[in-house]
Image (tube, rainbow, N blue to C red; front, side, top):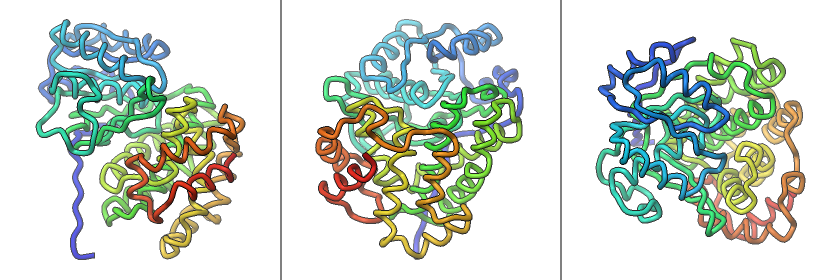
Length: 366
């Protein structure tokens, strides 16, 4: 390798009960008049943060899983009407991605879908700060926002160097007691980030270091976190490693598991982490001929054949093993493959795939 590049633009702070110091961190970032963005399930926590900070002016909780274009545009309108100076996203990946996408509309105007594409944004965006309450997407540091277009029954990916939040506050206390199913699915999303970043055709030494560190940690600490929601050590390590994996994919990007998972989420609203858990073993098997040198590193980190190791981990933490179990019909497989071949994640898959080959992966996972 004769050239490599890496960049992290988000200021990341991590610590137990760090949310109690929210005002200090917002002040250091120069953020004033923030609108809190959250979902109904996290609203009680968001309300506590709102009441404890004089830098926050209101709360918007109308965000759902697999958030859609209309939700983004309504959030942007609410922030504009309130005279907000920044958005504070408190929640999981959908909440953070919605805030990031709303920042596009607040900066560039128009409709969200006017700004589709890779690196079409040419200037800094309306500021976003993120307080993740799950350990999975790494959206608090990534240059992506994934939003569902309900009219097209598809997920749209926005990618730009300007999309990462300006501040990420990692407080594992906020993830204590997370339900087992949500811990499992978000954790498998983070693990898939780590694996696909390491195998990506854009992988480099900096993303490799982050991806492998994240993979080893998630593989070790996800089962105890699922088993005991109050396990402080497991919660700390999962939140940190999720962020590390997010940093890795911001440069190295992803692969066919994410391309197919995005398609499943768009068409059938399959939870993203669940789709990744089902698809990753089959995508690993497909990609092995192109990644033989790296395959054995994955095996060393996991202490098992990667295909068998990932499948066994997903089974151990109680996730579904087949697409038919999560609402995907056999007649969906062709359309899902057609959608996945157009997904940005497919372009960094280590092995070039055709629509027919993606359909074969889906059939194997069905």
